[in-house]
Amino acid sequence: MNQPMLWQDEPNTAPVLVCAYGEPWLGPHPRCNARGAELAREFAAGSWDAEGYMPAERKAKTRREATR
Image (tube, rainbow, N blue to C red; front, side, top):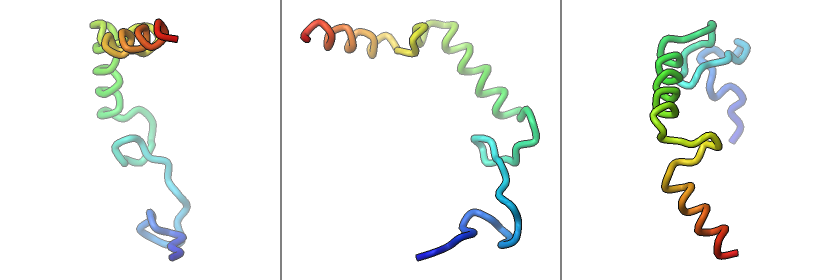
């Protein structure tokens, strides 16, 4: 099945860049900024380490490496 304009409302419009929430990208978006701030707080609180691992993931990785 071929639907060349599946995600566009009007068939003759150019594709539009959108943010993670499906809003047209017009620059900084309040919901995107809020999510970025939330992720920064979680990182600062120690939910992830500098390499992006959560404590349980780091522990499992250490165990896997020890068995090699």
